[in-house]
Image (cartoon, rainbow, N blue to C red; front, side, top):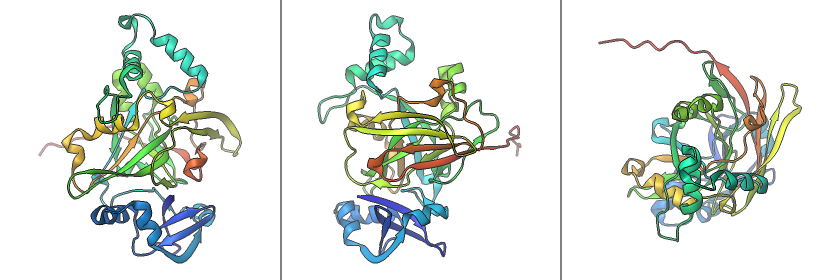
Amino acid sequence: MLLIQFTNEQGARQIGVLEQDTVRIIDGYTTTYALAQDAIRKSVGLAALADKSIGTNTASFEAIAADGRLLPPLDHTDDAHTYVTGTGLTHLGSADTRDAMHKKIGGDVETLSDSMKMFRMGVEGGKPAAGEAGVQPEWFYKGDGSIVAASGKDLAMPDFALDGGEEPEVAGLYVIGDDGQPYRVGFAIGNEFSDHVTERQNYLYLAHSKLRVCGLGPALLVGAAPAHIEGTSRIYDVDGKVRWEKAFFSGEQNMSHTIANLEHHHFKYPLFNRAGDVHIHFFGTATLSVADNIVVKEGETFEIDAPQFGPALRNKLAVYKTEVAKVKAL
């Protein structure tokens, strides 16, 4: 099942089940969050409650997208109650990339860079037996709900950024129940977006490089993530022509960690089990245009397309001006 959030022509929020181009509108709920919380409280599955709540009204996905009325597939009324986080060094990539990576991480561990040591740790211990905890992944904080852009909206980077590059990823979407239990609502494709040039200056700049906007959606895939996910990441120039294109792979078959292990090492902290909060957690990627020396320009468009997750995610790169921060003493 694919769920989307959007606004109708009058500006009111709605949610619906996406089937081809048809959106079957859900009655009694106007947000994925409300639907999920009710499913938790009633101890029923999200798909079952959504299916039971489908009304008679429909809408056209194409019309919604064309009008710019799509919303992220999960959000909170208060942006401060949404955590956007992620993990890196988790993906094996294509067969060629895997061969190259295994050569890099072979041999004496002391000769490896810190990043390669982390990757090797994941390969060796990121897929523990069910019910056990494996090795910790690289982890980062990205922002709150204010940084999440729906499909069709701009990805605005600050003018001090040295790069604005896409990261085609799958994200886990979660709601924390009244009892402090994390519940996975589903998965969505995303553009985690990062400043790779800043990060490459020094890996300790990872936090700065990640504190950026991201794209998410359009649809939320309810249920388990496919074990093998194959999609395409593209960049279109300002004239709408494809400037760069490459396949990307995700799902546990293409990862050095299980989803459960990545979830454990996020939700093991009490801070991330606060009742009512929303979590958007990116699982990483092995495919970046910056690796092919592509510099994305203002006005160009990112497209992340993985058919298992419904329509493609599209966002245009924008730049906003900043000034030197001024702090006043009281």
